[in-house]
Amino acid sequence: MSFLDPARGPVAIARGARTNLALLALLAVAFLTGWVAFAYATAPARWSLVLHAGGGFAILALLPWKSMIARRGLRRPQPGRWASVLFGVLVIVSLVAGLLHSTGVLVYIGPLTAMDFHVGAAIAAVPFAIWHVVARRVRVRATDLSRRNVLRGGVVVAGAALAYGASELVVKATGAPGAVRRFTGSYEAGSFEPRLMPVSSWLFDAIPVVDPSVWRLRAGGRSWSYDEIFVFDDRMTATLDCTGGFYSTQEWAGVRLDRLIGQPDGGSIRVVSSTGYDRRFPVDRARTLLLATRAGGRELDAGHGFPARLIVPEGRGFWWVKWVTAIEVDDLPHWWQPPFPLQ
Ligand code: HEM
Ligand code: HEM
Image (cartoon, rainbow, N blue to C red; front, side, top):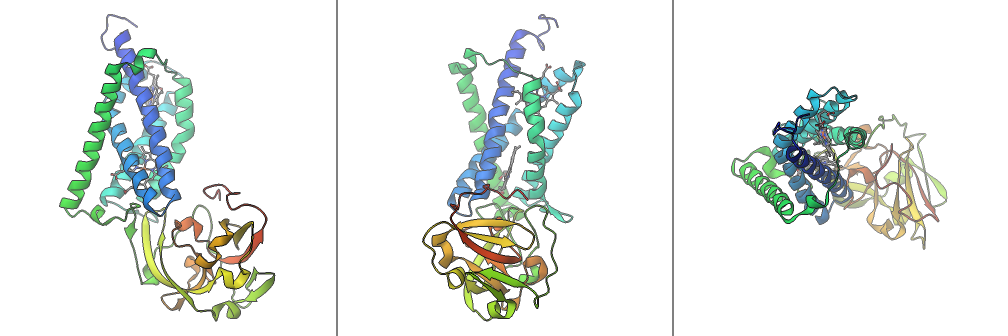
């Protein structure tokens, strides 16, 4: 390396290091705020997504600088270059899919959604990101936090905020499909028309075929048949907001959980699917949760959880356990579970 070459000299390298460090911080912000948004179906989801989009736009703003660093790196024969390139491809797929979703240019891609690609590519990028940062180590210097560099960072953040604001205005002004997103970023689909509601599951659950004459529900210390559950007629209008990027409001009917299990004093309620999928809830939510057997006055279909599924107003779709076979109360606290299901 020649220090006389301005593209490779110590100044260029220090700048490159700062760009890389800024990217590291922004990737962490985007990743974390994405998950915070998924954890809520209420106002914090919006605030988190504003930060998220700002972080995403700031990454976009730094890409021209990063491409100079990457070109410099690619010119050297270093082991593992393919992993850096794959990392780059995954980040770009995630960014493009996020923008396709938010503008509404392309929301469904075959059986998947742009959101599935967005989050899937981001998760797949994590091991490469860790490898990249360890293998292409960057030296942190005290001057990285000098007034001038903090100001530079501020300019990037302000530019990203402006670009995000402008993109939202353009989407609204042009009436692009993205203009009608819910505050979680999701699109309306099949509301009050259960048959038009998309079918989706968290990760790997296949749709089970259940024979209602042999199906049993364990709840409140006894076993219930389908007919016994079906006669209940508690109703609730609630919105299923799927992390795949759509939402659907339906009138659900079935049985409130407190009618099946009473009002337990402590511990938590565990709702279990025939697939083994489960989620826990605080016991004081029993009155607000519904085990639905019908949507829009008709029996559920298999994809939507037949014979019975949970309705969790104010919970994203992954809380709405389908194909329920047991509702248990035990001593474990409701937070004794991964924040997002692992299966
Ligand atoms: C590499 C990490 C990630 C980057 C760089 C990134 C970046 C972006 C960008 C640029 C957008 C478009 C923003 C807009 O125009 O409104 C977006 C949207 C979105 N992202 Fe991410 N994202 C990342 C990871 C994630 C993860 C892990 C999740 C969820 C667990 C997530 C959830 C979302 C959601 C829900 C939207 C839609 C927001 C809306 O339409 O208002 N993202 N992301
Ligand atoms: C948007 C996220 C990022 C992408 C897409 C990306 C991609 C790349 C690519 C394709 C290369 C060239 C191939 C190679 O040298 O292996 C590279 C080099 C490099 N990256 Fe990244 N990177 C990103 C973030 C980071 C971060 C967060 C750091 C460290 C904190 C970092 C540090 C480096 C370093 C030190 C080099 C080597 C430059 C040289 O040899 O002159 N990168 N990056």
